View (cartoon, rainbow, N blue to C red):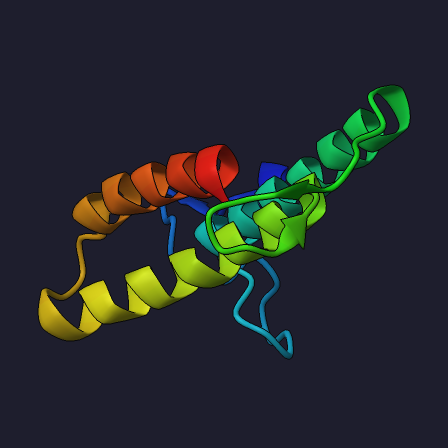
Length: 111
């Protein structure tokens, strides 16, 4: 597994070192963890759609949305929130994560 192969040195783990040396993409541990997280969310939402079928609902924007639509809006909006945070404040994205969590809660509640 890619996540189990985090490069280690005498000092400890090198989180930002490439997992696949000479690979075509910089598969670092945080990048792999991000894609595993997105994959897990998609699997959970697929199981929810099968187990608890949903009727589209009309939210505050006036358009009908399903869980998948709201997930897409959340991921897209979170990307823009993180890019805006990087532009104005820089590297530590802790504040952007908190804003994204509030944004996700609002989207799933009212959209």
